[in-house]
Image (tube, rainbow, N blue to C red; front, side):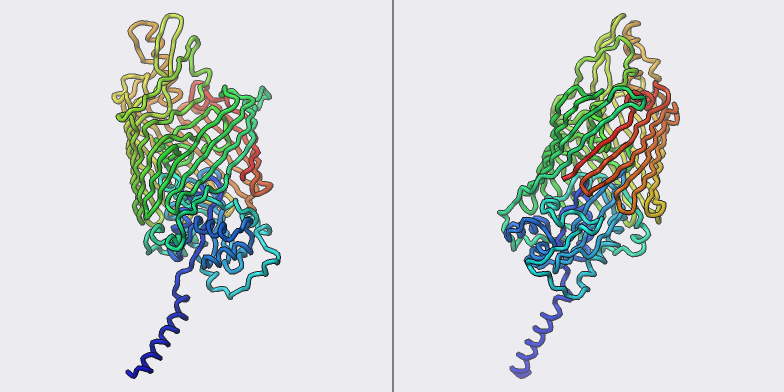
Length: 640
C-alpha cells in the first residue's frame, strides 16, 4: 500500500471511529440520594439496576463538582450545568415512602442536557430491602426511561438568566428541584436493611417486571459503577447537610380517660463523607415527654446509630452503633436476633422503636450470593411494657441484671443469602442472648415476692425467603431457638422452641394491597407454668408467679401457639392519602389487636396520621393483657 493511501486510510478509520464511538459508549448517569426512611438501601438497589446498562456516577462526585462550580441551589439549569461538567447523560433522584412492609419508590429522571424532568417512575417495593424481583420491577420502568434520553433529539438548555422549570408541577417529583440539601447523602448507601433484611414484592409492577425486565448478565453493580476517582481529588470529602424529622404525638384511651402520652421529638441524621469508599452515619433522637404511662424521663437523648462504613468492590464493613434488622415477614420476625426495641415510648411506625447496638458487620455480595458476619460485644436489651395484671399482688421488682461485656459473651451472627430470578433464600445462625428480658426470682417470703429482669443465652438457626409468582408474593421465615431451658422442665425460663411465619401478599388493582400471615410457635418440651415448684410454699408461690409472668410476656402459656395476621392497605393515586387496617389474633386464647390507620400528606414533607390500637380478649392472655395500653392516637410530622 502506498504511503499516502495508508495515511488516508488510517485517517478515515480514526474519523469513523471517533464518529461511531458515542453510539457504542455506555451512558453516564448520576445517581443521587433517595430520600425517606430506608432510602440508602433503595439507592443501593437502584445503583445495581442502573449498572446493568449504564456507568453510574456517584453522588460524592456530583457534590464536589457542585461545590467547585459554586452552585448553591439546584434547579433545572444548575442540574444541567453540573451534569455537563461531568459529561453525564442523565440524573436520577428519588423518594421512598413506606407503609407496613411495602413502600412506594418514586424515581425522577432528568435529561442532563437541560436538567428538565423527562420521566417519573413509581414502583411498589419491599420496605426493608429490595430483592431480585423488586430490582427487575425497577429495571422494567427505569431503564427504558433512561435509555429514552439518548434517543431524544438534542435540546438546547435555557439561557443562564432564563426561568428554571422544576418539579413543582409533578406530584410524584421530589422537592430536590428547589432545595440543594434535599438530595444530599453519603453514597456508601448501604444500610443494614439493604444487605440483611430481604423481602420479595412483585408489586403493582409485577407483571411488567416478569414480562419486560432486563436480564442481568453483567458484573455486580459495585464493579460496573464508577465514581471517576482517578480524575477527581480525594481530599474533598464532605460532611453533608443534616436531615431529620420532627413530630408531635398524642394518645388517649377511647373512653375519655387521662392522656396516655403527649410528646414531641426531634430526630437528626448526618452522613459525613470521608472519601469515595469511606463514609459514616450519625442519628440521634431527642424526645420530650409531657405525659406518659410508661416513660418516667421527661427528656430523652438516644444515640440510635453512629458508625463508620467502608464499601468497595462488593465488600461492606461497618463498625459502631448500628441497627441491623433481619427478617422478611410483617411485624413478626423469628430471625430478628440482633436488634432490641424500646417499648416505653409509643410511636406510629414500629421501626422507630428499634435501638442500636455496638457492632462490627462485614458483608460481601456477588451476583447471586451474599455473606454477612456480625459481632456484637455489648448487646442491646429491649425495654418492655409490663401490664399491671402481669405481676401478682405483693410482687416488687429489683433493678435488672444484664450480662457483663466479655469476649465469651459477645454475640455472633451470620447470614448467607442466595437469590435467583424472582426468589431469594437466607440462612441464619446466631449465638448470643435473648434481647427480651425475662423475670427471675430474687427472694420469696410468706408476705412478699421480689423479682428482677434478666437475660438468658440462646443458640439459634433459621431461614427467611420469598418468591413471586405473577402478582402473588410468598414469604417464609422461621427459626429453632435453644434456650437455657432446653429440656423444658423449668417453667420459669422460656423453653426451647420452633417459630415460623408463612405469608402471602397480592395487589388488588393499582391502589390496594392485601397481606395475610399464619404464625406458629411450638415448644417440643414444655411444662405448664402452674406446675412450677420450690423448696417451700413461699418459694413455690414465687416461682409460679415468675413462670406465669414470663409465659404471658414471652408467649409460652400453651405448648402450641398458633396465630394469624391480616393487613389491607390503600394508597390514593396522588399518594397524598394512605389508609390501612392491621389485625392480629392468637388462635389459642382468642386475644387480638386491631389497628386502623389513616394518613394524609398535605405537602411532600408533612404527614398527618390518625389511628387506633384496640386490644381485646382475656386479660390473662398476651394481647388481652395490653388492653390498658390501647388508645386512639394522632401524629403530625415534618421531614427535612
